[in-house]
Length: 182
Image (cartoon, rainbow, N blue to C red; front, side, top):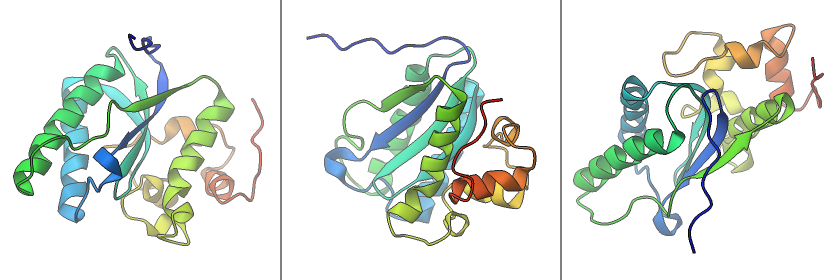
């Protein structure tokens, strides 16, 4: 049976996930995570996109990605292919790094856009790795918390949903349960 085609149009936003084959680790150390972030940047040079949020966990990744002119399948094909080659070569392994094709959910509302960013940024907290999302170094939350520019992540769209950027941090931590639909 053929797979259902993914919905795509220029400007579409997605929550994209990737899991290690057999739920195994896709990052064995910080060097692997740094390489993945480098490859995100290289991929964006070839296939421009906007990255609103990310989180690299031991055996999976989360990306909140907005397309410009390229279907996400081309973006993910390049990213996953290059990372798998790097990972297998560095760790002297063979075979699949990722389990099946990447997962993607189309983000179709402002509320879902914010919910996805909160979910991504709270992933390390929910996994029990840290108590504060800002303590996890492999997530874009540190960019939102510090306010420092980052070449990988664009914060403007998320911050534009709040009167003050500090309110986003309150939203992530559940101190503001809902955001108005303005």
